Image (cartoon, rainbow, N blue to C red):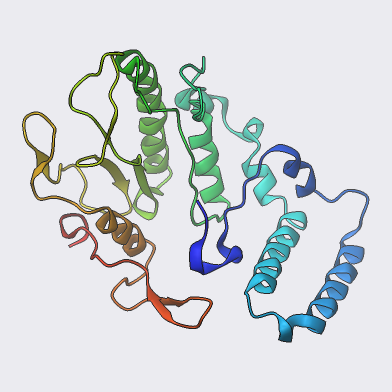
Length: 270
């Protein structure tokens, strides 16, 4: 996903691949890094007044984030599961063997553990892709494989957060892009179905332990308390302490934009 009118400063940081090597200081002292930072700031000021696109501010944010990473070990340590209790690592599992991946993500159970460690390190929002659920064929084999693995790491995450006294402060949202067809196709698969889907929410101090809304008996469409996608997003904002009724963000033209057009799910936060 992209950051839309928020600008590049709000783009996600992906700590993977070659970028991991740049998360540590290599042959440079903190003092020298500070001198380079001062020089970078002076160069930025030379053309800041002619930059109206927001790109400079975006680069400033990325630069600040990079410097914070380089001068602190908290993020690098959070990504290092060798520093975690082996019993906790085993609780989450590893999700192997990775099957039915195709054009999707592997079933990396330990990424949920990394997410917990990142939250402990001070990261406010963590998102990850788990598995590949686009089951146009072999739906039942795929879901049996993915479902059991996801159940293990997801239940481990909830248990882990609760035992650490963090569950009420962390909102967990699990969902996909849309639902799957109620009828099975000729390849023993299920195709795209936009009329109805589901989301699983936990933690965040919400009134959990309930099912909100219902479909007809064939799972074709919502017939009781339809929940709009924006209600879920509004609920997440609410749990982050953001009032969606009043909070706005200025787009690149200076116009205030509301975050969403719906209220949080009353059954969860009311």
